[in-house]
Amino acid sequence: MVSDRLWKKDFIFVTLANFLIYMIFYIFMAIIASYCVQIFHTSTGIAGLVSGIFLIGILLGRLWIGRMVQEVGSKKILLFGISLHLLSSLFYMFASNVLFLLGTRFFHGIAFGIAHTGAGTIAAQVIPRTRQGEGIGFYTQSQIIATALGPFLGILLSRNWGFKAVFWTGLFIALIGFLVSLFISPPMEPSKQPQPKRGLRLSELIEYRAVPISLIILISGFIYFSLMTFLPLYGKKANLEGPVSLFFLVYAITVMLSRPISGRLLDLKGPNFVVYPCLLLFALGMILLGCAKSGFLLLLSAVIIGLGYGNFFSCGHAIAIKSVPPERIGLATATYYIFIDIGSGIGPYIFGLLLSFMDYKGLFFLFSLVVFSALLLYRFFVSRFLKGGMDHEDRSFK
Image (cartoon, rainbow, N blue to C red; front, side, top):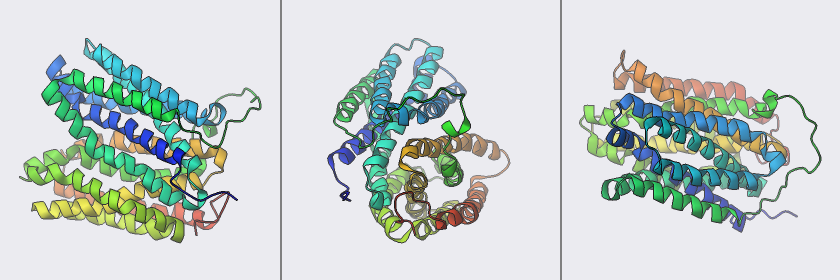
């Protein structure tokens, strides 16, 4: 009989490894634009390019490594990705021009995509199938904590000790992550049978059974990362800079407190019981944000968006991995995050273009309608599929 105990050694260590991976991501993301402008005297446009090319690296890293997880093994993938993190931190220190820095950011994005896919696959392997929603909720808490601590630490280090201190810190964190990963023992080993050589197929890059829910997270991520990018400018224009500085802290606290509950409800009641309220709350939060004329209302919208998008993010991941057999979990995880990367990459760009024709309030209202459309897509393209019995080992999704 397989134990359904969640807090075992492997789950604790892979959650810690995921936290360290995201700490590196957010520490560097918080300072890279300032680094470009202050050290290399670039325009903000070039600084944005240096920051954004990281996304292309993540996409390529996920696409390349997703099809190899089963053959190579998730632990080796994780160790390889974190090793590349170590190299990336060293490369930042030797960047003497913008072109070299651009290449470093691209390389670092590949490293993140590989390491994150490996960690996510291990998490899915070690979490009991009957507690998948709850386990993924706790696992992704590590990302939320990094969201709050990473930017704070990056800015603190760069202001007081310079950018080199940031890169040395990233190197140190990557080293700790590598050591932590050595103690992880995922239960599923790659197949030892020789695989026939064949041409690259789409099914080896994308897990089609994870695409429907991944499309919903693409739309949701499109909106959330647009909000993350432009909220500081909105706060300055609306004279709400103080509350805006607390927005993502309130968001992170809300998600940390609510995800364990939503994850458990996902396992007990099924995905529809959680997803519908999450998407509705996300849409309502965007409406409230558009109406906010005080700091209280703005921070209240952070709470509602945290309950909505913050919980849907982890629930969608659980749905993706429970829609496939165990040997396809790695590819399902890669697929899910590829779609998130696409949404987070194109969202801020399109939001910026639309600002030429609409004000912030109008865009927030428009994006709330987009969330409602995502809810309808879930109803017709995901919800019905779940009712057909999506789990290959149990029927915990009802």
